[in-house]
Image (cartoon, rainbow, N blue to C red; front, top):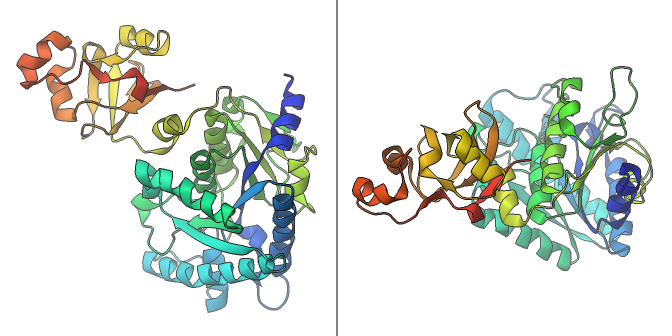
Length: 375
Ligand code: GLU
């Protein structure tokens, strides 16, 4: 199908959509004191309510907790002290949800708050529970509103920005589309012209700078990173301006707005999404050319005989990143052996495992069913 037609089809048929809204859109500098922009929030609520009537499920990822908290406390800069940032977010999150609650009550819709940290996505059971909870909120006639749990998140627990949280949520829910709303029209080329369609992300990564707003985090480069996670899962993402009227309903009606990042091909199932795109690997292994051909071209399991390098500490059942001899990321999968065990059997045949380990539970280091080869 030609790209323009594919764009139209995937967006107009999307039933479940995640919409991420950045801090800059949610806060208003108008008036004497800047505050949460109630008019903007009402605008979004109106569109979400309309889409629900049309049978489409919208899950919101709302930033703005830190911004709202700072404003109400009269703090002029995003705090750098972790405890202060957490406390400010705790105050702002409540204010943020109050605004969303007010806006949605006009349409007789309740809101459900879900706050998450990075580790919630690393754990398979929690990953599945995110989907169960959000789906149930929809069934109960409520609008799920997600944010990072800034009040407890410290560096190793953080997403860093809500773009990645939104992309991982899209993948966890197996939603059909992610819409990242920002204050620019989309990704612009060197001449400032909008790039309206992306089907291969590698071509565009050089075009962006890291950057963030006064209160929030993220910028165009994290938006592209987030869009790529969704493309790799086989779904569509759109980066568009939240300053446009009725942007959510118009994008989902297939209007030519924003930068649309098309699905990279196959749709991954939930388990593949978790292994390949979500959970953080506990270790890395290097493999030789023979093993590389076996897993990538012949879709076979990974055997110890092909393992040439091991980095990190990991246990059975952990996720490993598999690299080629030149360092290229080839695959991710669940290991049958711990790092200690693997060090004893790397480069060896499975007939030798019994002697080397005292047991030989598995012939494969990563079984093909637990291995996802990366695009
Ligand atoms: N979670 C942060 C907040 O609510 C925003 C993170 C971001 O800007 O992406 O303030």
